[in-house]
Image (cartoon, rainbow, N blue to C red; front, side):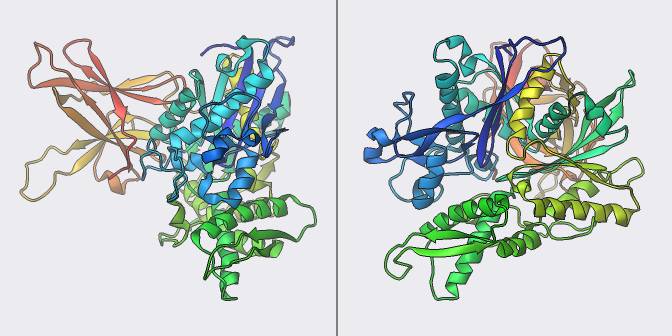
Length: 607
């Protein structure tokens, strides 16, 4: 990638976007890390009011009619084609008119149940509102960041524009190949053509390393397994990082496990709290319609954040705007109490459980109203138990962490951190293991962007890098070699085409297996993945794969043009590349010559 003056880390979060940067032209001693700074993002905070904020709330307000030309919604830079307003104003105004609000774009970006390149947001809005696709919504947030940076940092020098810098964009460790590809596409649409992806839990850990400086090796020791527990607005992300000793005797780090993508986080807390308050209204024979419920969700989000962050506050006001006949007509005021949060959040999302517990499979009515594939069991501690118990050592014992780093806005709450740490200690005690300690985070909201900027410096040769590679194994479905049986579909087997841990910039080719691609017709291959199968090697074949921790992901497809010498099909092998920017490329390689065909990931909904 290009080496600009600034190394910029961008946390494209579900709830907030954060930008951090390091100036690589500032004089410093050799091998010294450049100071990392927070970029305060200019944004609308009210009609006609632009202010700097530490983060850009990941909310888009869709302009309509006269608002397109309203001076009250203009930014200092020109955006003639912008149909949305991003940031604080969007979040606050959108709570009042939720049918014009786009939120959780990042969660939609990894939702395989919808076409992520079709305009569907705001979700379930029936009014005449301009809609965006999840990719376009993510692009709109990144475009605001780009324009804000260029206005603040590059007004007098175009070489300092964001698109000319070294950009590291964070994604959940659990983002699959499709979600990563779409993240890159959204950045390119925003004019950021040259980026590198980095996993958020690793970024949070890098931020801690930067804070600790050379003393980080004094706070961990060989054999330590560090759990990064990242619970943000829309997702819960778990990673395990192991501390090893290199040949030079110095400690090094390796990411050894990544959890499944869990669509449970602060959004779920907000939704649950809103249903909790709506139930109290129903007890008074008062009911809310869908429009009012969306507004209540956003009001609960603000109340939750205030109660989590306030010292001594035991309740916070919540307002619901009135509607028409048969419903609440006038504005009604409620209050959310700290005791309510303790009951709903701790018992519902962070219950005490054993390491053997698994997430429940029952559906959760109401939570699916937003169209997102929320986890059927919102108990994050049970998902954490499943994650840890599914990653074992050579003796088959769960790899219990010896330290934990918390990250994400949800973890700002001391009572939530204390509950999770208590559960982890309970698992250690039950297993006869040692102690677990908390490694203090830099900042629960800002550390991911901060760590991404640190990683950019490490990529240039300064600082320490966490080894890891691919966070999951990838497979291609192949038909079993057996006689056809009338009325019975041929069973498929899973061929490992990209094993866990493949490093960025590497490639793997299945030379031992040939496939015949039909010429002149579109051909499709099913792709599967698993975050838990770390021992599968390139070319391994797994029977009964759907019972072996492997799940269907997407398909790849291509169409081969016929040449004069081609017959009905072309024998090919498959090659998988892990690009330097952190995405996957699938290629079909002709056996008989040097032709190659790029296979496109299918981003349409899974059947």
